[in-house]
Image (cartoon, rainbow, N blue to C red; front, side):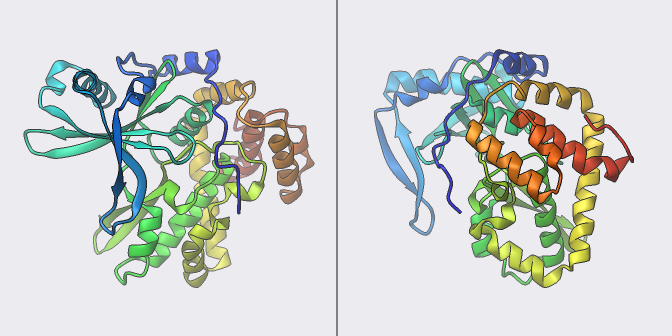
Length: 348
């Protein structure tokens, strides 16, 4: 499955920015994305197996690094706490990496607590409307809460902890200790979450797997980490993780240990959970989608192709009446959730 790798960036509209202010996502910061581009040198970062990670560690002049060190510590404190000076006195910027692959070209900041040598990461990216909508929809509709802040054209995101999907498939999937039924169930639910809110491009390197011990078993959660392809592509299959060849091992595992009836049951379970979240956050979600209805996040060609294919596959010509991606998502939620939670519930 091919797609346009370099998706164009879409500007955060005034109404979307006002929404972000009202929901405490907007926080003043001293460093903007452009400030991090002024590095003097860079060198490739390789993993433990000697494979190029597509990240580069960047080096700045001493004076610029002094500015970044102080400002980035303040940003981390604002992202994780109240931003006070007590929160940063034991912090140190250990490394800054830059990724030229993909759409957002992020900077990854490694920050160290000098008291106990514990470290954490956060990311600084160019603000893109597609990504902001993706983050917000993830926060509202999924079981995962997303922590990020925005200021002008700069987006700051916390690190989402987990094993990258491609690494998990390569190193863990054949391990005898994993509970294949539970893991396959979670992949079905993840697949459903992505489709209903039109989050695309969930190849194995765009999500992580988190594993939590539970008595003598394990619980699994698959979490998206890349939201650039929110409601952009024009093919319905692009919004189903199971169609990507990178996820084939998950699909095969599900076919081996799940029945068609159990797959349908898990899909209904996930839709019920999403419906409850919609009901609980109806005011916020309605406002967000009404803004998205008037904010360009795709091409007209992609939009027309997507709604036509959804109308055909869902056997519902009403989708053809959608006038924007925001309205299409609203129709997806209404048509797929109302009979799950409360019959005839007007979801949005």
